[in-house]
Structures are given as structure tokens and as C-alpha cells.
Image (cartoon, rainbow, N blue to C red; front, side):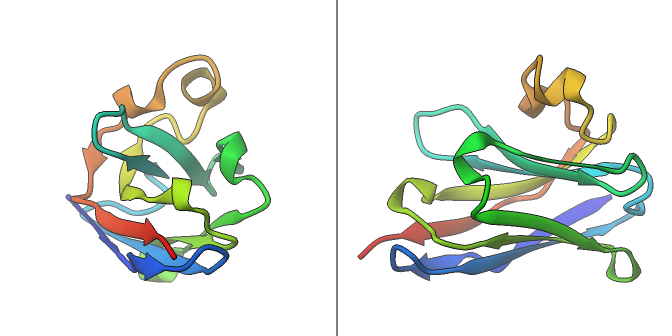
Length: 129
């Protein structure tokens, strides 16, 4: 099982980036795929999650209207389109495999970072002028 993130980089405030998470060893029907981010000294934060099997997608409030999660089952890849980026979006972004397929029990009433089965190694996103 492997999850590999790509697409990170440096961008000015207001700019855009598209992150990709290519998975192998399972299909997107088997798991929800989530994006998390982490800055030094803080706990990993759930950003977004998608499960086409369950018909669900979720976003943390701070990215709603700016980030869009999508997937391409043929490529076994999940994307995170990030627009109107702000300096406080700066973080290492990770994708992860969610066995509960973005269920609200984990994402709304618990801490999703503790419920993932597999993680990628992360990609750095820096938003700065």
C-alpha cells in the first residue's frame, strides 16, 4: 500500500495549487481519501475527505469555498484544488486512507487524524509574498 503526494510548492497569497495523491495497493472504492495538513508544533488537521463509494465529501470550515476535492478512479488519484491561498494555509499536506469513508462520526464528532489506516509522506505548501 502506498500513497504519494505531489504538487506542493511556493505561491503568493491569492494563488492556486493542485495537489495530487496517487494510491496503489488498493482502489478508491476501498477507502475514503483524506487530506490533512500540519504545521510545526500543532496537531495534524483534517482538511477534506472524499468517498465516491459513500457519496460523501467534507471540508473543514476554513477551506470551504476555496478548496475542491475530486478523484479520478481510472488513475487511482485524488486531487485537492486549492484556490485563493492564504499564508495560514502554509503547511505540509498529507493524504491518507480513511476506512470509514469520510463518515461524520469521525469527521464531525471525533478526530479524524486518529482514524486513518495509511498515510503518505507529505508535500510542502508555502504561501508567502
